[in-house]
Length: 298
Image (cartoon, rainbow, N blue to C red):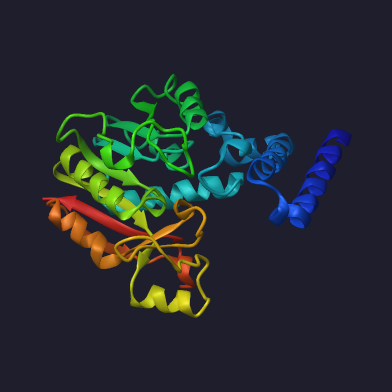
């Protein structure tokens, strides 16, 4: 019990330190401190992790590996359940062959284990440690779930990447997949890269296939919210083709794209796309944070 109190005290101390010096710390030092907090929380919350996930706890990463969303076990589980419900609404079937571009550390994957009885899942991600975790922990138990690292350049996630996003070809043959998942990927990409990925999605998606993709969409409502300082994303810095970023020093941190441009990209690549749910990111009272686009290749 004493060890729990020691860890808790350390977490509180580091959090307090971060609050006071966060703006003055260089990025490497800030990442080190944030990781120290997450490692400590992982040790502290081991019992909570077991309570939340039960027998599936072994497939849930420690908090310090959760770089694709909130570092919180309860929220990790809820995020997965929320996404799964929307996947099914978008047309996901248990027999589908699924491609998850930006699969992360399994946040969207966990609820699919028992659902995809005869289907299969391929996850792509540029972050080596997240792919390693999923490959070592998930694939040995669920052989129809596979993960691979892609060495695509990203200033935010993979600054040493050897392939530009606009040159990257998905490592699969044409018409390979029934369902495509992309959660919070295009929110970190430039419009010309998005356009190339949409073309690749069209190439690997079967006729009759579907998909679920999230964006930060710029339209009359969201732009007004940004101008009125009601948005959690301050997308005011021009990028290209009307897209905007919230960080002038590193655009890829968060990029919003014009809604009409996004829909045109899909149409040009023979994919029907529709916005089915606008998110809470710009001050709306909604259940999901980002804007959701469902696609279909009829």
